[in-house]
Image: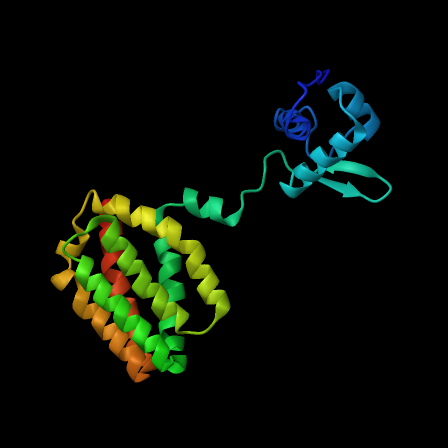
Length: 230
C-alpha cells in the first residue's frame, strides 16, 4: 500500500502521523521491520532527514525502536501515554486511593522533619482554607489542595513533593466536578476545619502517630464522598 506524497509543511509532523497511521492500521504489525529510510522517503515524497526525524518522534512515543545494524522495528501499535495523560484519564476515586497512600506517609515524615518555616506555611494555608470554606467551588478546592501540599512539602522528600504535584491537577478537576454533585464542605462538620487543624497541630508538635492518624481519617471523609458517587 503506497503511503502517498505529503503536503509541503510541516513535513516531519506529517511524516510521523502517516507512519503512525500505518502502524495503527496493522500495515506494519508489532515486530515488523520498517522499510529503509530511502524507501520511506521516496514513498512519502520527502528527504531522508525528514524521515529520520519522524522515526525519532515515533521512537519517543514508544512505537518503534532502532536495532543497531538491523533496522527500525515496530514495538507497539499505539503511543505510550505519559504519566500526566494517564492521570487525567484515570477515575478520580482511583487517583484518590493513591493520594491517601502518599499523604499518610508524608504526614508522618512531616511530623518528624518539619521546620518552623514549614509550620508557618501550613498555618497560613489552614487560614486560607477557612477563608474559602463558605465560598466553595474551585477556590475552596485550591485552598484545600494548597494545605495538603504544604504538609507534603514539610516531609522534605523531593520525590513525594513531585508526586503530589503530578497528582494535584487530576485531583483538582475531579474534586471540582464532585462539588457540582455534592456540597462536600457543607457535608463535613465545620467544613472539615477541625480535622485539618488537628492534622496541622499533629505535624507541628512532631507527633508522628497522630499526624498519620489525622491524615488517614481526614482523607477518608472525601474518599467516602467519592465512593458514594460510584
